[in-house]
Image (cartoon, rainbow, N blue to C red):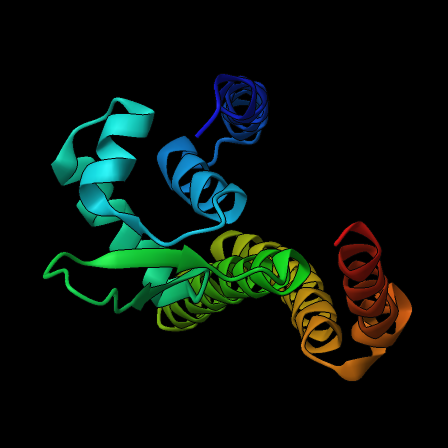
Length: 185
């Protein structure tokens, strides 16, 4: 690979690192996805270690996580016993799948928290009028949180629907990428 391509990739990798740090995201996963996306050939774990100057263990753990998320896939390279990976090139799909997964997990956690909180307050012994009023006020706050949770669930349902895909015009973006690739060839 030419020095200029490596230099250009390093600029992108540096910016990806900054973005991940600001968003609290796993920068190793982002770097691995980025480096696989930017390379036109599948990469072995060893080549990723060498390119990013990180441990093989870190590369191995994080590349498998990316594989579970559908961001990279293992590919066979003729004549080699090593594992090779290539990136899913539909970046919008990768990002949206990850956003939906994270949102689904957080919304589920919030739902569980609300259920446990309702159970706790409803099974409590409010022995006097003051404790009963306190419990009622708490229940009202839980009701407000439940409404917020329902709205979040509705938004997640929208993310999973075709409405968002149509709004983002994903099909046209994919078509633009193909046209751009054909024009550059």
